Length: 140
Picture 1: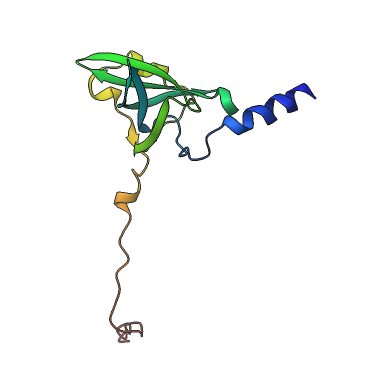
Picture 2: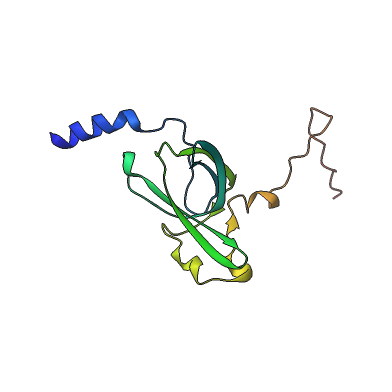
């Protein structure tokens, strides 16, 4: 009974306009920074290496590389300080947590694109005739 009460109270604070993203995707999170009386937005773009929690407690860990040094930030998705989340690139990950990327350097740090198989599909050719071409007759 108390769990249902907590979920009903927190449901009003959950954001409705959050895009769907998964582990391995590259996203850009715009968050609000308050400096004195001024407020500005700053973007943090990186790879999602972890996502945990549910409901109002959902958190996402984003990792990016700055001057050959890895930087990770943890963002609560439903925080009022998170202004916007934009999808940059979909990545293909086969694990739920990508903590192994912390030890990788160079090209092995990159993830495959989720669309990796689409570039090899043949483009269907269209013909001007509506009737199929006749096969050549065989000579006996």
